[in-house]
Each structure stands twice: as structure tokens, then as C-alpha cells.
Length: 386
Image 1 (cartoon, one colour):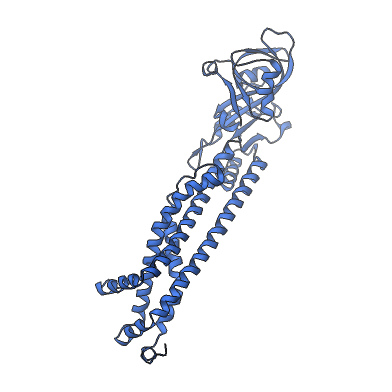
Image 2 (cartoon, helix red, strand yellow):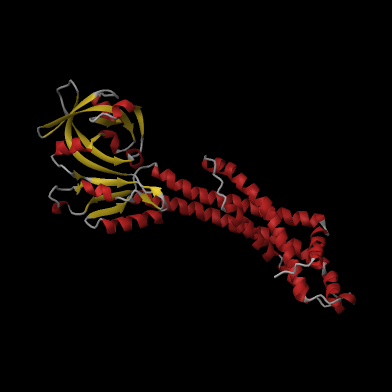
């Protein structure tokens, strides 16, 4: 598109360095715009990735439950082999999935006679800590490997006065079992009143071999990604009811949309103000260069060559301002993320070339006043009318 002659680039260099004060102002405006743009874009991308991660800390967001309780010979349960049909990955990210079997049994601390009713949950699958929120206040890795290991919610632990290392006696309709407490769990939810045991033990207590009550899965991704996973899984498991947890999905979607909308609007506003600043500088340039353009045309310079000169100047200004400003902005977003969200943002390097490209586009668009120079007539310039 542009001539590659040494004279062409010599003229461009002279155009850039003719007024260092004006050059500094234009580069400062472009650099500041690029810095703010890259910083906010980096925060926007980082917020999207972090939100999906942070919401997964709240537990499962996909549930597979019985579609029709009366149609199943086992009651409101699913076949246990359905757990193996849950995809291990989605969009390149692991999908922890755990099967649960719930029953109301009678529980007592080992050595005590009086039993109290409690919710017992049989658990099977990988990633129980991913699909279930909370943290373990007491934990023993050695006891966790025991065949009859169990985990007790904080409220249940207080109710039965047990700690990690104690034993519980479980019974349900004449069927009995014992378990060794390896952890005490605090979630702030209904799990605090439950007792989690091996699925096989729960199936024996409930006399429901090979059955589970439901499957909980944690799918990482945007609300659209999660909905696509749910739709695909529903097609794979037509006999089950596959759905997302509405509260989590809506909260995640609304929060990200608000953050994304605010940052996007700010980026547009910053680019608009940057364009106005650069356009003001270019207007002065256009006024100063009327005589030069008239002389170039008088000695045979074409309108196309004149436009190319100013276009090359705008592109070079955009590249210089974008390279420096975008780098500063990405580094600044690390501090800004920590100041606004409490967590330092991670540099997303895809933002860098995008921000530089946006700055070049803004620079070219802001050079609009220079296009008026193409209509300058040499005769008018020489008569002092331009």
C-alpha cells in the first residue's frame, strides 16, 4: 500500500520530529489511552476466569437427579453406573462428579446407647471437595484411607460430641454399621448436619445396592459453557433430570455481566476521549502543514502520496503509543485488581496485541483532520488564501 522509497520514509520521519512538543502530547494521549484500555481489558478477561473459579468454590453447579421417582424400582434413586457416564472433562477442564445416596438413620457415638436421627450420605466419586463447599476443621489423612472412614458435619460433630479419630455407630431398620471419623466439615449449609460415609456402607444400610440418590458435578466455565454442558448431558442421560443450580448460574451471570458492562463502557469512554485529544493535536498539524502540502502538490506530488504520508504517520504514532502504553497498562492492572477486587490480576497477554491494534485504529481515526489537506490547492497557498 505504501511506497517503500527511502525518500517516503525520510519525509515521514521529518513529519514526526518537526515539533517534539506536539509529538510528545499526541504520544502521551495515545499511550494513556492504551494503558487504560489494556488495563481494563486485562481486568475484564481476568475477572471472567476468576469468577468461574471462585463460584466453583461454592460447590456443585450441575445436578443429575431421578426424573420420575415412581417409575424406578429403587424409588427416588438412579443406577450407580450412571456416574461413569458423566464426562471427565469439558472444554479441556476436569469435571468433578460425585454420587450421593441419602437416608435418615440413627446415629450414636461408639460406646453410647442412646441413638439420635441424622442424615447419612453415602459418597462415591472423585472430587468431593470440589462439589461440596466448606473446609475441614479437623482432618486425619491416615484415617481417611480406612474402609469405614466417615466425615462429619460441624453441627453433627457437636451433636454427637465426636472429633477426628472417634467412632460412630449407625443403624437403619435393623441394619447396623460403624465408621471412623477422619474429618469434621464446616460449610455453613445443610452439610453441617450430615454424616458422609462410603457409598457401599450407605447402600447396605438403606438396602439399595447399586443405587444413588443423585449426582453432583462442578463444571468450570461461563454460564453459556455450563448450559451447553447441561444440554449435552441431558441428551446423554434421557432417563434422568439434568439441571443447573439456578441461584449460582444467575448470580454468576449477573455479576460478570455487570463487571463486563462497566469495564467495556469505561474502555469506550476512554477511547473516545483519547480520540478527541489526538484529533485536537492533528487539527493543529493540519493548519501548520497547509503550505507544505501545497508545495508538494505544486512540484507534482499526488493526492494519494500525501494521504499515504499522513496515514503512515498516524500508524507509527499509534504503534509507538500502543506498545508503551499497553505494557504499562497490563502491569498496572495487577495493582488495580488487588486494589479493587482484593486479588492481583494475572497478566493475560492476548490483551497486549489487541490493545496495540485498538490504539492504532484510534490514531488513524483521529487523523481525520489531516484528510482535509488533500483538498488544498497550490494556487491558493501561494496567494496566501489557504
